[in-house]
Image (cartoon, rainbow, N blue to C red; front, side, top):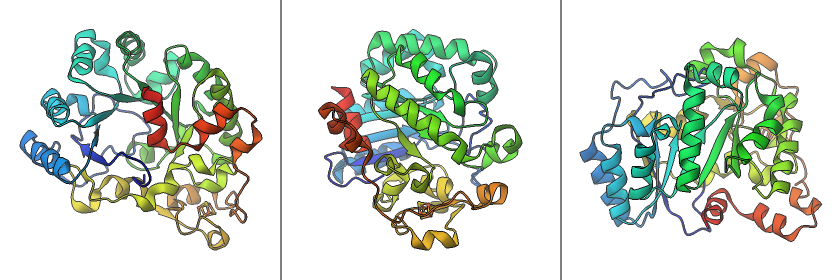
Length: 339
Ligand code: SF4
């Protein structure tokens, strides 16, 4: 994601590979060759000071699951002491403990992104691979809502949930969720092992996502952002496809437990390729293409290059507030969202 044209300069810390869930769609699980499970506090600390010196002002904590790192609170406190804005990507389980959530709030996390793949108990627990995780997440959401920590969610599109995204929005909007990032599957790690259970054709899902995005907006939320999806599937919504911003992201802006070849974007995007028809596409230079395994499963018939820049989707709306929000980039939206 680019840091251009905004006053955030973002540094990412992939604190650990460990996780207290075992999601059937997890692309990171068993996908790193490194034996190093966790970055130790001293290494993190040095990087954080260096990031500060180099003008970074925004830290993203990720994993695995960052909250299971043994020095999670120490890292949080250090980042806060140095004046960083802090954004935590988490599965939310630890926030079911009110004291834990309170401590995160008190130290000063600015924004949480929760990985919530469904709103129904059975489907949620199937996708997260953990019995009892649903009641824990509901508790966590109540705690987060009570403590007024700004929150977004990541919705992972699978065979089991793609047609229910409107209900998902209805359900979680009531619990304070106004910003949703839709991610399509990366058929790596667990997702590679569980392909038959979760695979879905992208073209089948798009109409549900667009409809739910517009409904969220009508309620007073923000339009969706999309990730791990080629822009040609989301004509009229291309300005919300995070993959197109990748060319502006400097991979040196992160630390992680793996080898230099296993940086976050390398893991997420290393198996993506372009098809012959991509050569005609106006996004050829910016788009990482589509995953190889997806093409093996479904072929390339769905790939229809974007020939002409589509009329931006916000132009379909007269509402000035809609236009204002839609034009913001992802990070700018988060900044806006925090007010
Ligand atoms: S480059 Fe290819 S995969 Fe990417 S948006 Fe264009 S047609 Fe789709």
